[in-house]
Length: 416
Image (cartoon, rainbow, N blue to C red; front, side, top):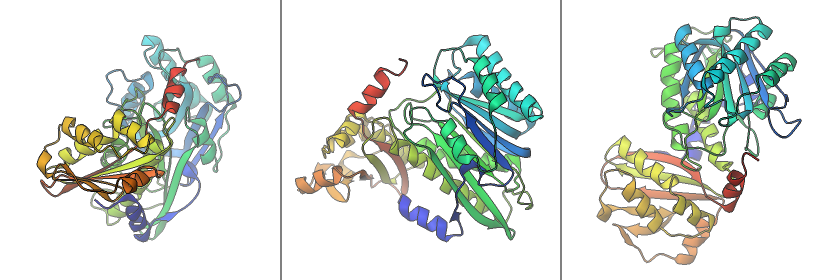
């Protein structure tokens, strides 16, 4: 697998151009935020709205948690009932609306209904998301107040990004521009997430928009594949959220023939989507709760894709290895241990491990490496771990961060 910076360069060289705007970079979308008192800190934006001028083709992936939030359950239901169409999403931060019984679903529906009334559209076309503390009833009266006062604008992408965050230290957005059938097309997105990050066939909260026209089934196929190679390969702390959601809206304002798998520009559209999802995915562990270092793990020459992914994810999800990164400690034994428990097919006697280009293990045994050099690369803001299994020709890449006292401080008093 090509390493990420080179991949980004390749994508841009293939015809993608970076633009500003996030979710409103694409034509036909408006967005905004407001503060309605859901968060404990008064005055912080805690409600965001993204709306298209017309009904969109839409796709989504969601958490596979058995304790999914009411908003996740409602969005799954709505996308299935509309055949993959939607026009708006309203997002609250500060409250997860999870484990609230029948009332939780009633509140999720009410959140969608009052938004539909404000926008003058069918409630079936309004999706909902929540993020924050689990087990507290959503203050629906505050949500209703927020929906009534929120204003959306064609340049409201940055405001939307601000309105969806919780423990994030910054917003996370990107947008690209490219050409389909001679028409200019844009695709942009925003994500949030800094803790409770270890997705499985889902994402954190992420919202993507494009002004390309596309068939819903094609959108869903591409989105599921893109999520699997981006958000599903990041880790902050090994915990999967109850609210993980990614939604993709296609307005069709560009006026191209609706894209499907046989379209001449299908591959370019897919490259744009993967560029955006990979960028946003990496931004999450970069901003992990308490994180001071970012790690990229590459596993090469695995016998199968599943083995490569298991091995890579096991390393990013090892707390003792994350602590070693925090301390700039080239303790490669932590990596060996993570690989051994990963469930991946491997041969201990064939393993090679490099840290930042320093070969520390060859055929499962420590090399006569330069300890100072190894410690120096471990102390960089970005730490690269490269594992060669020497059992096949399949590679995978995963991304994560270190584990510091800051993470404990953040989560020891989360509900106070």
